[in-house]
Amino acid sequence: MHNDKLRTQALIAFILLLCSSLLIANPAQQPPQTDNNLVISGSWKAGYDPYGSRVDWGKTSEQAIKTVFSLNGKQNAQNWPYVELIYSSPNSLEGVKTIQLAYKSSTPMIVKLSQSDFSSAGDNSYAHYQIKIPATKKWKTIKLKTKKFKQPGWAPKSAKAIDLNLGNVSAVYFAPDIDLEKGGEGVFELQELKLLP
Image 1 (cartoon, rainbow, N blue to C red):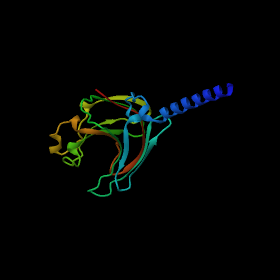
Image 2: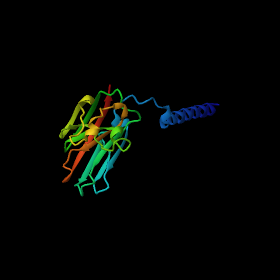
Image 3: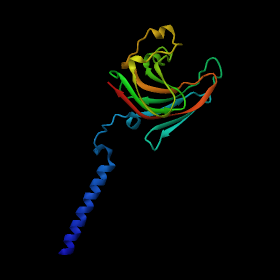
Image 4: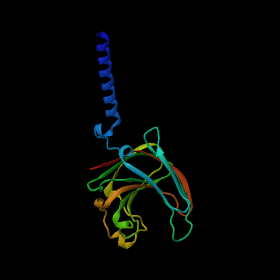
């Protein structure tokens, strides 16, 4: 009788342990992510040209995205080199007024708002609204107002006639501000990205 009671208690303990481990293993059972730090919860990728530039990137132990890039110098008049880290949003950035970043970088960086009006689906100018942030050896947190983003000086007149429309923006690009003729290398680390109203 005593052994049967012990076996029953052991079986109940085993079943409870099994159920709790299944709850932990199944993300659908977990509470929703409340932290809006998109470095942790967002969708990321890297892009680079087919002319010899490279990007190596991944998460670090500090829960940051570390990007090591090598930008090959411009080879000819038609093909411009590029390297970029890209956050892709499931929704447009309509209503976003502030972009908060915590980063460090060996070079100044350009933060671009990828607006469909300027991509291959639009005028193909890639004259996206952007802002430059400085290089910094230590972690730095900054807030960028979306109304402060401007088009690059080389934007064609037709593109300059198009206002910033966050309803047509679904990605944020981070690109090094390097001389495209000469190329160069650098490291960019992003610990926080928040899109704030």
